[in-house]
Amino acid sequence: MPVKYQIFPEKKLVIVSYSAELTLQEILAARKKGAADPDFDPAYNVIDDISAVKSSTISFDDIAGISGSSVANKGVKRALFVATDLQKGMAHMYKVLSEASGHDFRIFTDYDQACEWVKQAATDEKG
Image (cartoon, one colour):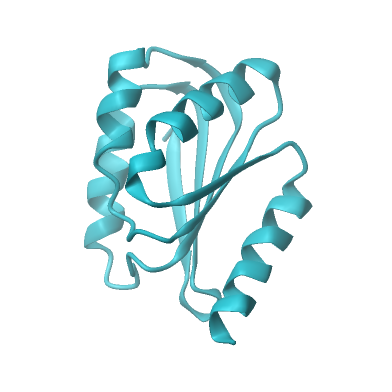
């Protein structure tokens, strides 16, 4: 399955991993399944790991459509982890188109830095 998610309630974190050839249908199915998961909370911060995506059939219009329909609350921190320039370009396009969602997006090429940023965001929220 090209889209998998893990929910960590104790960390208030969702990690979504994308791989292989990514399609719009797989993203929408994973969103629906994740939102229905009893452990899911739309206030949790998110790491979107697209570093294993090899190709994609997702168009600009698809990205625009999914960017405006997030299941996460406004104010959520979203770390976008990428490994290639093409992935970085896709992540940047998603970030720009999603700005109206009220999420705080950052793009990372180092997974540990992405985790640290999200961890720090969760710590800051606790006060």
